[in-house]
Image 1 (cartoon, rainbow, N blue to C red):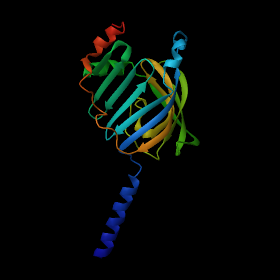
Image 2 (tube, one colour):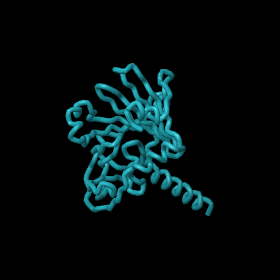
Image 3 (cartoon, rainbow, N blue to C red):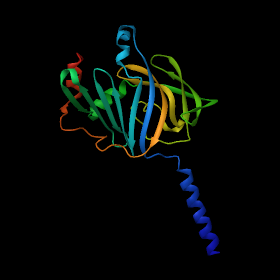
Image 4 (cartoon, rainbow, N blue to C red):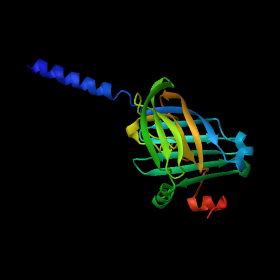
Length: 221
């Protein structure tokens, strides 16, 4: 009887391990992106990156956007309600770090898109994973799009994927929203492995400023 109980227990443990094996705790995601720019920004299209790289580890993610004139890094830990923006502007010789306060996060949340998502039945392969099509409507603008989710892999959300609830799975192809712009993103590659040291922090050469100070630099109020 003891052998049977132990065998069942080990089988259960094996089942649990297998069920959780789709979780990738640390690694890199590479997205190909296509920016939807308003007419007045079309002349700047070549300055926007065609790829975005995301590092993730545990509950933290770090998304880096690089262009010819600047680079930015969005660091997020949703469980700790922590968000930080790093800006490197070589032409100004400046590096800025903004840690979003609870009040800043509330202001940002008020302007986030409101998505209505309806699962479909169509599937396709993206980056080697099986993805299911979903219809998406953004309520504020009444814009329709589609998103493709997989449950073959589980990865902590990042600045691009943050708008989509985990219940649908991990988004592999979708519309995201960054700095007032929308962007079509498709996962090209997911690599499991260690991320560089210091990925989720700022070096000492970054100047700490507030979100209000950053907005004033941009001519905002």
